[in-house]
Length: 379
Image 1: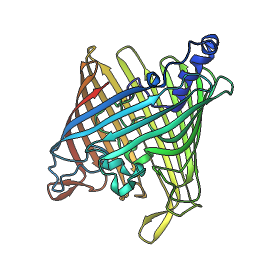
Image 2 (image 1 turned 90 degrees about the horizontal axis):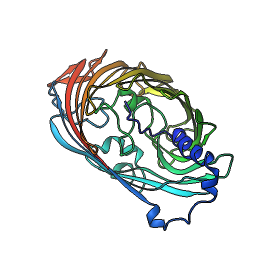
Image 3 (image 1 turned 135 degrees about the vertical axis):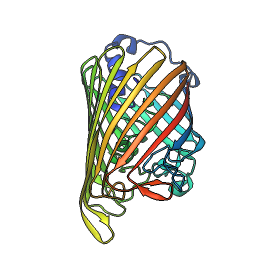
Image 4 (image 1 turned 180 degrees about the vertical axis):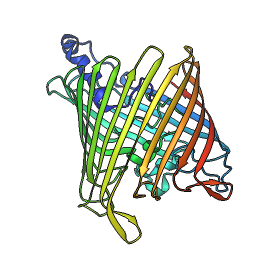
């Protein structure tokens, strides 16, 4: 489950723009601006881990994992540095750049094709890099130009301002939705309870467009009560190389509910489809995929918590995973906050499939069980 720091463009806009709208006089009659270098902020996120697969796969890989794909090895997963100039009021101009290095970068390198390109990025990625301007429209229309992390899904690419309660990622995160987009997005807070975002982008994980068409995405964020937040997301557009006609469509629902001071709950449902998709060699047909996940986190003490995730991902056409199958998993994650900047996590996970897609030694298997230890530092 996400921490209270959500990477949601619509919700972030709501916080920034509503704050200015409710404080018109301070915004209009503020003190002289600080020097440019005093307006910049720098933050960092570091993660290291050890993963063990009880199947002892001969390939040394944990199948269908996004970041924890290496078995029986210590890893420096990622170091992320974030440089930004926040925006706070209409006509303000800012930017944000997230640069990441580490051994877990190769699985998101398809989203990195900026500069060194898809094949050359290896252990480096610019997760985000965009300019921001708040247009003087109503309470303020927030515009971002560049590359940014997707609004889809419940889980996030971890960083200083957002990390998941489970140390490993869900199948939905890895196979149902995109990671990043490059283009322009506009976010507007209609009130403290309703905000929205609209974007026009190159597509799914494309720093440079792979066809002549653009994709369109949107998000609506609803906060009917202080304890409940609902995200409605959608996106459509052609995504295959050189194909401007056949659209890929994604619908996504995520919600969080704080049941009490100690218990937080969450859900995520995804449904995707692609027209005339190449599901097997020489065969194309309309393909679809989807699934759901439920999340719960209990604070045992102020420093110790337990997080549970259960999910199912259906890829009956094999378009997203390469095999027609139904994947399920359940994950238990104990977490200990050793200090305000250091978090220690364990992760016990069981994956199953109705096809033999995993490895047990050198044989095919329909399940795999893993254990992972993870330490993260945030400042």
